Length: 202
Image 1 (cartoon, helix red, strand yellow):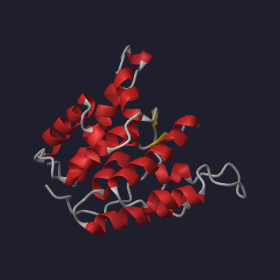
Image 2: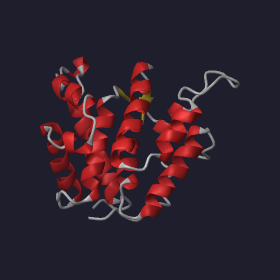
Image 3: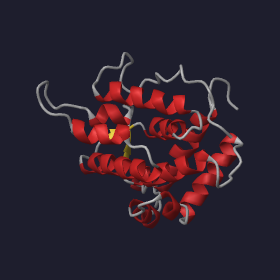
């Protein structure tokens, strides 16, 4: 494992690369896989997502990057499935974390891009299906605005959110809330997750 990187970060990096490989990129003469992206955007549950070969390919890549065992009872498998469906909605990668982009205001007194009520539903989502639903709604809004978010950071956050340590999920909810309200001390896109150094369960 790379020094300084948790396995969640390694998983996030592998997931971001998987996402880039699926994205069509005419400038690189890269066809991507539009069909896989379209299939994933239609997925409504984790069990359904796990039937898709693109998700199983992601799981294989994450397992190689992290040395996690790909067993169906592991929480990281759920995180990978949710990441695959969520990221399939997004077209652009940038520096800012997702919650910060959702909370962006065009003007000081303007409403945020994504309403506070909807963001609260996202933060409070508890079950796998509800989290998948709320993440999908947020990602579709970003897609509609052609907004860029930090894909690798989002993926890393999702692996931490599904950690078997509940403290990790609480930490991510706090981080996302402060990002949404534009109250992070770090510059946009800076990695301010250094305090979360525990690895998710293998």
